[in-house]
Length: 199
Image (tube, rainbow, N blue to C red; front, side):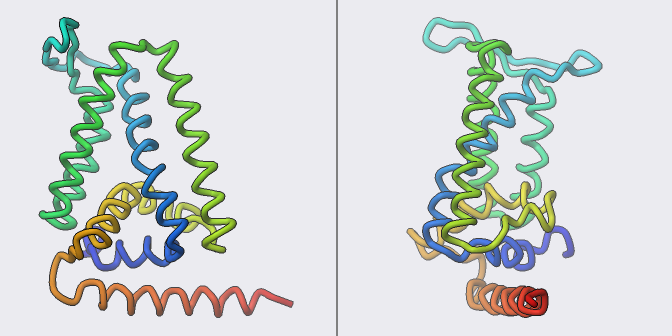
């Protein structure tokens, strides 16, 4: 299991996101970070020609290029489906939608305008999340302990949380009970560690 162990990955991320307001902030701002990241990746030149799909939308011609934006998206798509094929498939579809929509937006905006949009959205989204952690969670973001795992899990975590809250979803019976016990252990270890650091 290891890297693709859903329980461990979810528990790791959940340990940093237990406050409802902080979770809500992440639900609003995590996917825009992913979307604008894919948008920016669309402008990175590839070392060789890649296939493209041309299509028309509302009388305007667009094209999808299998570029770094697609490769970035594909990493998330494959990881999410491997984590949990039900929720992961939904997350994978959202990732693919972000790639298609960002490709269209990249064609419309061009790099000169797109990077400004990316900058504004990323700044607002990151500031909101740091406020969520500082004011409401009282714990530093997960990316400070494991940046790769935090970036990969964030979009999936917020979607998973939404499915749990609104539909009571769990990948197998007892998942949330098991993960909660793992989170409680990790949180207690964190509290003990911080208590030892105090004078």
